[in-house]
Image (tube, rainbow, N blue to C red; front, side, top):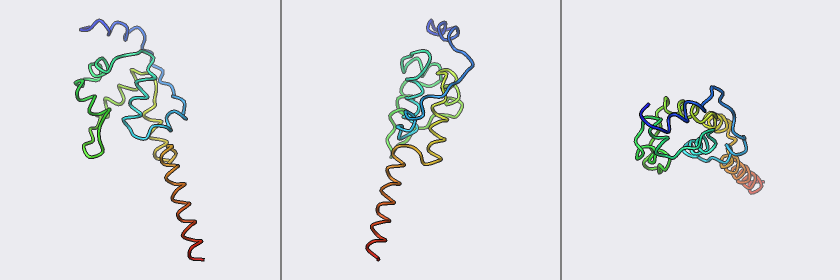
Length: 127
């Protein structure tokens, strides 16, 4: 073990990976938001620098992933996503993907509501 903080990791990480409250996951507008939620709900509190070390990323790369802009997105490698969930002990990333696929994220449902209102207005205008 190279770093002292790894000692706490080895003793406190268990194999079970639990759900985060679904209503909190639904508030995540982007995948980086889901990463942050995963990190914040971790069984063991860690700094971004510690997370980066454990995931095999540089602190700068992790920062770019967590704070990416739409025109210059940075993505986390899939094996790092799995390791993040394992180390954190929760599956917020998978939950986010599931809600996103169903259109059940908070921002998606508000967009859908506006689409339906626009469609209703169009129907009334044509009637």
